[in-house]
Length: 372
Image (cartoon, rainbow, N blue to C red; front, side, top):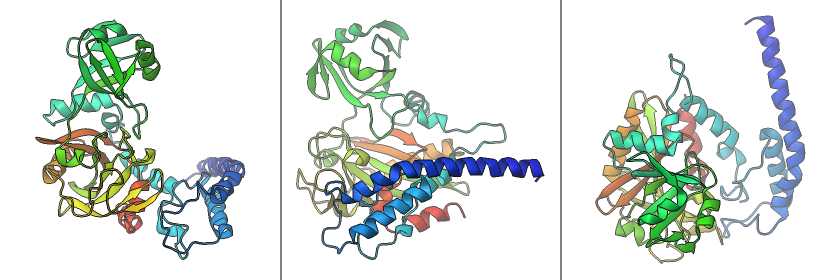
């Protein structure tokens, strides 16, 4: 390495360190406020003895200065429990760097495959072209117009009212369920997330260009947990020396009438035992009163041991599809179970680990072993 290259690397490192320090100086009062606020600092483990507020504040401030951001999952990880070690989980910036570094690595030709996953339209077209069950793309929608995909005909948005529609509208590159809503048109009337809406209401929800996909009917077993939401399996697969294997799996379940099952937006998450194809242990609730539950808070369905229909078929589907995009290291698949079998909703190269780290105490060791 030349002296010039070393100097450039050092200068870049110094700039990054200075930027992180400035962020930390800005954020540390918020880190302390989170610990002092009774709502933000509610424990997920009410039966456990807690650390002192001083120790919790010190750990959160230290995290800010080490990583340049807040530790949003300190309490869901149970780090407030006396004796809990903050180094037992992977810091999120470290997780991001490892995950993205492997997934976004360029091939010899100077490209990678993550674009197949990030664009919802491209993914659905790609998966369906290979015969995988996935929601069909129906139309492109914007605040002013719609374009029917099958005919490639464009029309003003109000042309949507001429036919009955029952679908899901989502941004091309959204994450965590943000911007996703149910769209139904019946006899010229518009319903957004089940509520009557005007054409102007729909325009306001659309914002930028979105994709309209057909709605998936879920299996009665999944609907029985919480019928208002599409309750999907998150199956993370890893390409391990040319073979795809399941790294982790859990089920996301809506609650409180919510239409989205994203844990980041307040749903319930339960570990799946891949060998048994069934839910394992308690579920973790993030919204309302956070903590662990044995039964769904709304429907009362017992979680532990609940057999998931078509689980093995779902695993086989995502394993095959991962083989088709084999140069992406890890993928978090969202899989719905319909009355007739699994349907792959989407694949995520930027899958999140906050849920898994809260559910699985051994996540850190297993995840870091992927990069040995």
